[in-house]
Structure formats: structure tokens, C-alpha cells
Image (cartoon, rainbow, N blue to C red; front, side, top):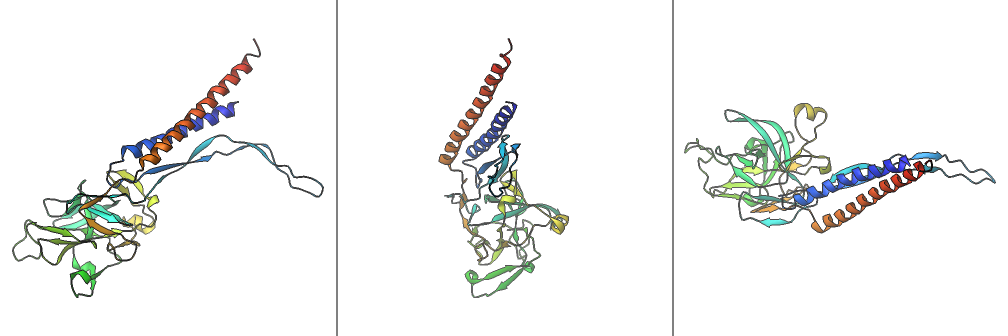
Length: 314
């Protein structure tokens, strides 16, 4: 009897967690680039009432008799299917059409020399330009890419559209500066931002000049389910071994958007919507509610049976 009570309690506890995940999905139905969660259960270790035996000639085998002890949480997965695009007509809104994440970072400056302190991933491409001319996200983290030609190899210079860029293997990204308010007239970088354009390959053009002011890179992380949610539409990069000591992420999928290595292209003037499917979430809510109710019935029925047992002695 006690086993049935424990199994019912485990069912209540884990169905409540599943309901929490569903509620979070529905709450974030309009969150930019939000990825829905999915709850998976598994059974707890079963108790053996009778063991099994091998079959010999003329003797039937005996199957084991086991009683399950309830359920536990197997995983809470993130579903990284792409959300639908929504048009904003804002140039600094950029959506990744395909695989990949923007790499953003917490940066410290020694004068004009940036040092990356911590890396993050995000699918939220709502970007801004701060007062020093750097491309940042809504949390003030710096969008990483290429702003210095020494980290780029340029193959083919027929025209701007046919340029092919390859990033150095040990390059982890740097803040992209679109203008410098303190720049002089002779400096290569502009001292004011008047117009801006972002092309599908991440090239950023400033003030109508047919030369790039920066290159936004995309990281096609191979195992996105391994990332950890941090809030603010950010994911934490798991680091191991030497990468952990150096605080550097893997560069296996790091490259130019739409370059043919798995990275999606950028769509300027659009954002990615949440991939939450409300019809699926409401169906899951009904199933979870009924599962929760069924487990409460197990507990109340077990309690009634215990009451009958106790009442044998009056």
C-alpha cells in the first residue's frame, strides 16, 4: 500500500514540473526567438518480488515479478526548431534564417582595446548602436564578429557581392564598431552614423560607402540542446578542458553567415518569433492535467484501502 502512495506522489510531483514547463512555454509565446521546452519522464527502479530463472530441457522458464515505484524526470529538452519570421523594417533587427547563434560577450576596454570576459549565445537579433559606435544587444552585450581586417582572409575581389571571407581558426570574435565619435576626418572609420545596411552574409555597410564597416559572424553550435538558458534570451556556452581555462568557445561552427558551412543567412529588418505551438501546448496541458488527476485518485484510493485495513480492528 505504501508503494502505491509513493508512486502517486512521484506522479504528482513530476506532472507539476511538466505543467511548469508548459506554463513557461505559453508565457513566452511572444518572446523573440524563444525556444519551447519539452518534459520527458522515465520510470524509477522497480522492486523485485520474484527473480527470473533460465529455461532447461523439460522445464519452463520463470519470468520476473516486479513492482514499479513511480516516475522521475528524465529530461527537460529545448526544441530548437526555427520560429516564424516577423517583419519589423528596422535595419538593426537581424534574423538568422537557418542554423546558428549570434555570439555576444561581456567586454572590458583598456582605452580602445577590447578584452572579452565572457561569451554567450543568442538567437535574438534585435541590435542597437551604443554611444561609442559599437553594435550591442538589448542587454548591452557586444555583438561579436570582425571589425579588423587582420583577422580576415579575402579571396576574390571581383566586386563586393562576390567577396569570399574566411576567418582565422583562433579568432573568437571582436566587438564591431560602426563609427567612432572621436574619429578625425582622415580616419578610416566614420565619426557619425547616418545610414546602415546589413546584407545576408553579415556584412555591415555604413553611410552608403561600398566597403564594410564590420562583419557579423554566426556560430552553428553542433549540440544546441547542451546549452544552458540564462534568461534575457541568452544561452551559456559549455566550456571544457583548455577551452575552459582560456574561457574560449569552440570555433567548429564559427563563420560567415550563408557561407555553406551550416550557418544560416541573415535577414535584416526581421526578427524570429517564438517557436511555441499553442495548439500543442494546450493539448499537453490537458494530458498533464488528467495525469495529475489520475495520480490524486491513486493516493485517495490507497488511503481508503489503508482505512479499510485499519478498520478491521474496531
